[in-house]
Image (cartoon, rainbow, N blue to C red; front, side, top):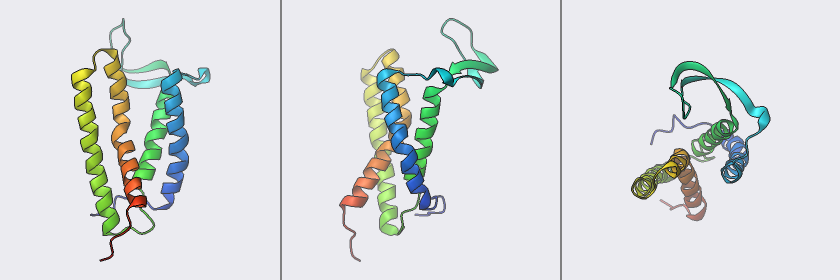
Length: 155
């Protein structure tokens, strides 16, 4: 497996410092729907839409960006953790990385199929929001579990 696209190992530690608090804030935001008042901002939007208004293209939009910041930080932390080299990046690690990524994609789309068949209305939108993060989260969880539980095979 070509590892040229992997980040240096030092980014993994930074990623964990970002990912863990962001994940906690994401869970807290999902449960309480908390939005910080001081995070109201006018942002540029390629496309914005209100429930009772016509959509607008390429305009500024007034909104609370709490969820956006949590999502961005969660993705950045997840990318740093998931795609940084290990201290020793060999064929065994590359194989674990590849199989974990394929497994995460399979599980993600199986969950999506279940959601498409059994979840309707606005709750489906909530599932789609979570679905944006599931490939990355499942990949990180599976890769790290396999990495720390399975002893390396001696060739």
